[in-house]
Amino acid sequence: MAYRPVKALIHLNALQQNLRQVKTFAPDSKVLAIIKSNGYGHGIERVAGQLTQADGYGVACIDEAIVLRQKGFLHPIVLLEGLFSEAELSIAIQHRLEFAVHSFLQLEWLKNSAIKTPLNIWLKLDTGMHRLGFQVHEIQNVIAELKALPAPVNIHLMSHFASADESEAFTQKQLSIFNQVAGNLKCPRSIANSAGVQRYPESHLDWVRPGIMLYGACATSETVPGLKPVMTLMSQIISLKWIEAGETVGYGQTWQASRRSLIAVVAIGYGDGYPRHAPSGTPVLIHGERMPLVGRVSMDMITVDVTDLAEKVTIGDEAILWGQGLPVDVIADACGTIGYELLCGVTQRVPRVEER
Image (cartoon, rainbow, N blue to C red; front, side, top):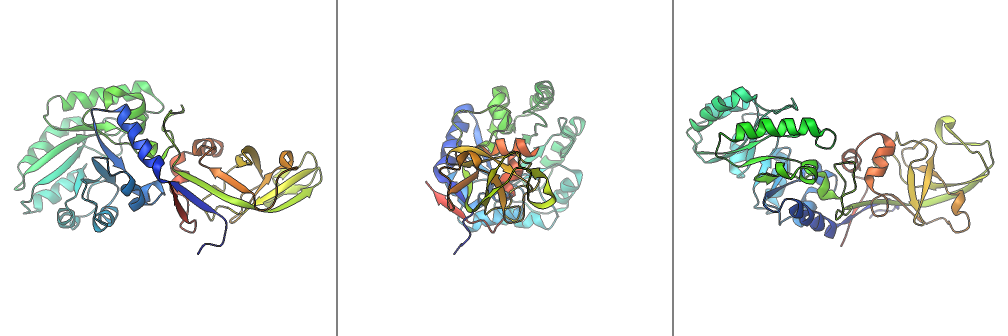
């Protein structure tokens, strides 16, 4: 039983709605729903259960994939970073997993294996992000080596946009490189992430790989109609206190009242995943109004200036940190980060409460 008032409401219907929105953007593409990092902090099993209309799931590692298999999910599951050791190959085959191949070391593990079970491999091409993947001039030789394996190999060609939410010129350059390579191959192709889904229809190809947009946050600087927040992080006011002009609030005395002010203490802090670096002025939604956070975020509490709500605010009132009525992207922007980090950072001591 949870006694602290902090909780993360998980709006299950919003997941389904957001997947439908993905399909509206890319009606002719299959959807690999990205549910790594515990479903972006929402719970990987919970998320998978609401996204059964996707054509497959993308995860970061075998541990995440095994959880899904043990819970009975039969969808194609792709290990987006591939195998981390040679020993994982037999485990991947046992659980019928598909996996990326992005390095010559991973290729060597396959060549050393006598496995003859058919393999579904997502071959990673580096089109300019320079994180994972083979160079353009290496791809043909890699494909030849994959086809020479004892096991039949079904190849998907994939790459990843570096800045589809920021640079159209670089995104088009990446897409051009990808299409040049893919044009010589007869295999399914995938490059579009959430920003690609939203902004570049020509990148949708055979598979799209939406992540953040499934959770109702925006991969671009624009608001996307039809997307609904899946997580509402909320708590309650546990204290109200008037302070005089000139007095300060919180550790380090970083905020000083310019007027007589009513300060609300809300039971949430960086121990729950609320960002410690959130500056004064970061909005908190109380009674439907955006009230400014003041002073430093503590481990278990934040302080909010609710002077303008003095006539109606009371102890026990609900405070929304992000979610319905206050997009996580607004908080992320105030904190100089991205919604991904905030959603993934909600700690395990915060109970997830399902709501339809």
